[in-house]
Length: 87
Image (cartoon, rainbow, N blue to C red; front, side, top):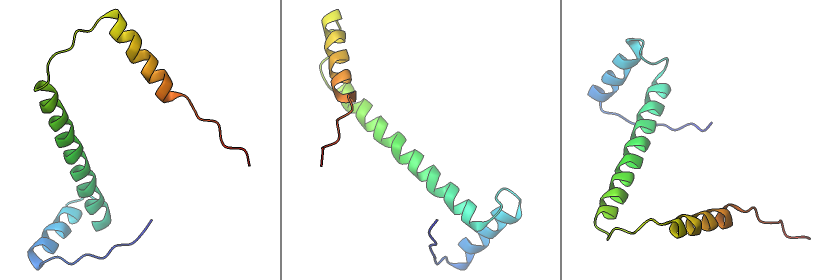
């Protein structure tokens, strides 16, 4: 694990210390890690929302047995492991 030093204004530093002292977190590092994870989840959720909103703008596609068969073929093709190059 890597170490990172950050600077905070006094009010923010006090707030972080209060969160730790309340017993919600065992250390400042744990609190900051939780904030970073929450930010990652938020950004992933926003990305998904963007994809879904964009999909709503596209024309619907008929889902037929042939469509499913093609999708399965593409998934199988994409999921095949590649053989390592011989040296």
